[in-house]
Length: 138
Image (cartoon, rainbow, N blue to C red; front, side, top):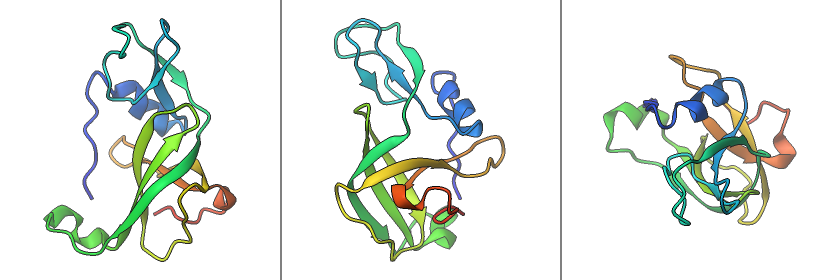
């Protein structure tokens, strides 16, 4: 497994994930919601805020990784890579362990969090109907 390395700029996102909260950047000037890694808004605003997001999303696309040239991830295959659009607007990449998930583009998704490893909790999106089942998490 490869864990992300939070930077000073993204630490609020990762700290919130450990608390099972999804934070996204928000522009106080124009009201846009932004990806957690963006440091300024398209309107030119640099003073972005972190705001709690709904955790709701729609699946835009998905694929299954069955081979992995990266040695640190070889033991993780197969896994399903997801692209979701949050209700607030930003698109996020996520994954689910394994394959064979009953997924379809446009389906409702909901945020879920892996248990923290080395102080980092991965943010995942799972089908909304599976929320609370524990299904899809490692």
